[in-house]
Image (cartoon, rainbow, N blue to C red; front, side, top):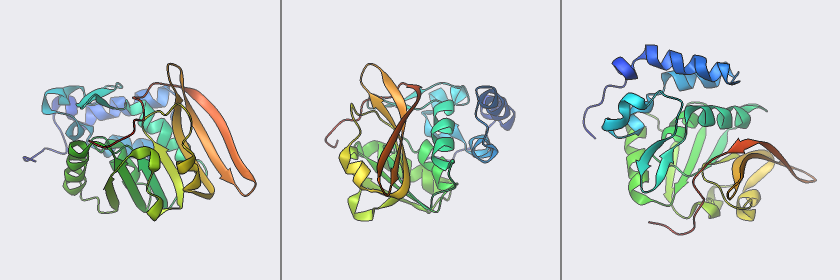
Length: 219
């Protein structure tokens, strides 16, 4: 990757990021720790240079391979929900994408294990972790619906693509007392919380969502 200005200028400057953070507050994001990570993480390096001027708009952006970089509200909301019961130590992320959500998580928890089915996307995500000097992320190129059972159980799981139903394999990798944040559904999707307790699983729909589908197979 060529030299990149992490601080940004113009439409990627800190002033522009501050406007984004204020918008997220206005939309209901209240966790100031999450908002600070959103403020300081250079989202513009996770999209193609031609789209960098739009990086701090509250909108999803294409990253190739029919995948998208989630809008900042979605990243902040999912992260906030994951941290509600306190910062988990060990997190599985299903869907590395270009690495933006990965980078946000890596600044908030001890260990991030992230899986991605599209190899070239994950390679870009790896290079961005090096650029940001985030060394607490482990990557695996695999079918996301299967998770990473060899590294489980996980204190928390975040899924960044939507299955029709919650994969049983992911529930099994969630530790007792752990939480999964996952979009679920086809035409109508809902951001969903899955809390695993000693007596079973509690599932709660939070709000409507729009994600790319969680697909099988690797590329």
